[in-house]
Amino acid sequence: MNDLTKDTPAPAPAPAGTPLVELTGVSKSYGNVRALREVSLEVHAGEITCVLGDNGAGKSTLIKIIAGLHPHDAGTYTIEGEQVRHTSPREALDRGIATVYQDLAVVPLMPVWRNFFLGSEPTKGRGPLRRLDVAAMRGTTHQALLRMGIDLRDVDQPIGTLSGGERQCVAIARAVHFGAKVLVLDEPTAALGVKQSGVVLKYVAAARDAGLGVVLITHNPHHAYLVGDRFILLKRGTMSGSHLKKDITLDELTREMAGGSELDELTHELMRRTTTAPPATDPENPA
Amino acid sequence: MSPVDDERLAPRSVVRRLLARPELGSAVGAVAVFVFFSIVADSFLRASSLGTVLYASSTIGIMAVPVALLMIGGEFDLSAGVLVTSSALVSSMFSYQMTANVWVGVGVSLLVTLAIGAFNGILLVRTKLPSFIITLGTFLMLTGLNLGFTKLISGTVSTKSISDMEGFPTAQDLFASHWTIGSVDLQVTIAWWLGLVVVATWVLLRTRAGNWIFAAGGNADAARAVGVPVARTKIGLYMAVAFCAWISGQHLLFSFDVVQSGEGVGNEFLYIIAAVIGGCLMTGGYGSAIGSAVGAFIFGMTNKGIVYAQWNPDWFKFFLGAMLLLATLLNAWVRKRAEAAA
Image 1 (cartoon, rainbow over the protein chains, first blue to last red):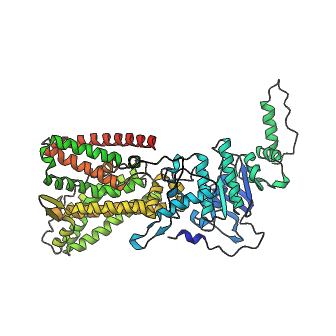
Image 2 (cartoon, one colour; image 1 turned 120 degrees about the horizontal axis):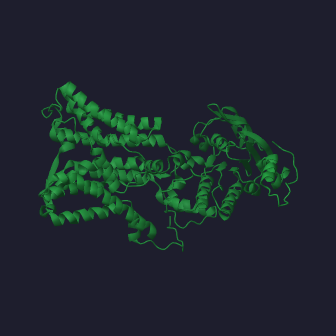
Image 3 (tube, rainbow over the protein chains, first blue to last red; image 1 turned 90 degrees about the vertical axis):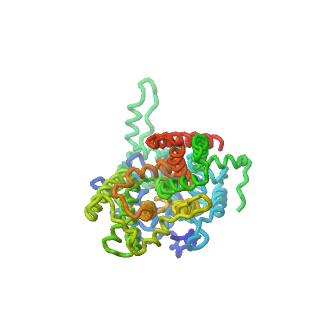
């Protein structure tokens, strides 16, 4: 059992320009289902890499590999230049990869402060008197949330009583506090309203500004384009596009994600005869 | 660390804070049961009755503590009742057959009982089957083994008396002695019970393991994702049940010096009832060890109160069932009120 102080000693800094996380040609099969084929991505410190894709595109599989829930079958996964193959989330956590899941983020009936330190509880005392440092846990939780700009009413309330956006923010603040180098966010805005999504994106940006590399998984290109620096598009388990922000506009991103010509067909099908809406200007089908 | 000041937070009164505790509903229920039997049974309030009621409470309470922890951790153990008997049988028969010091049998019994608990836990985390099914299986298997082995070895359904064997008196001191204070006769099991409640409460609220128990029952996937050893926590909980079954089993053995192999069946539900009355959620993630003690105390009061009221004890199970329903309803009502107030 480790104390949370183990998070502090940083390993020797990697040479400049080395991505924090780099996947090259990573594949994963579940039995005869090829969930992911030849996917590559880079995550740099202080940048947000967005992974976009429709349902079933392989986003969840990708996140599980990065988070250490499943090992990959082929390709390489490097963290700061070092090749890794995780078999448990703990290993990924210990290497500074913190993952925030949409539904899995918290234990609803537990108070906010217990959730905040779950799995990395600070203790004091020795032997049979070794106990949770409750006062420090409460205070630190409040301080850490405040630093992220979240002013919580009461750290003793069950976290289930917070709104969805607030829960995501607590989870992000937790990752930042525990010295994560890479923050992986699984659809943080999927179940949220417009305003709440905005709040969450603000904290995502705050984490980036704190120097973390962020992987943002989403199926909303508008949210991705607001904060993203790199965009990876997934389609039926393969990578259908990889762009830097300077090389692509929001419209192109949206179109590419929706699948170019498929969207044209859909527009055509849905168009009422009486309306005059023309299909969008014809781009090339990227798929 | 200073308390958090916030103008959006109305100061919470002591009453409100009490209302948010899981054991509150059971405490109200315990007072109600106490008042009820004080009125209908004259001898209920006598000091000597207290010892009897506490003894009845402790025999269930010792097991209700780990069963409550296990329920908070999100699992059941239906084999807990017969495991107590198995534990008693192992120490009795081992000592008798090997003509060893009784303490050797007690030690062997501890190992065997813990192994059965570990078996339950490991099977659970490996197969990912519901604990209801797994422990129903071990419940039936142990029931069969208890009877089968006892008959095979001693020829009857009960073990041979070990009261004249070496080590018996000292083991009896530890597991089945009693003190008399004034007119109150206090069994040693009461001390075991209260000790276990204190330890379990400490573990639950003030240690990392306690945090993990709440998390394992409240949302196992989330717990695993942040690095909580959920599997290890659950196996540990089953072993805690086994440890307490060992204490209960040794008490059974050393208070009567023979063990009936068919005993214990059905007790697993009494443990669960005590835990549920005490505020444990059936779905896990919420509850307390103190609540389970209050639940066991309600059981003890009802059990003996019916005798003091000179009612036909045949009706006892009916009252127990009604009590369970009422306590659970009261619990739900109190919690709703508390949440509305908070």
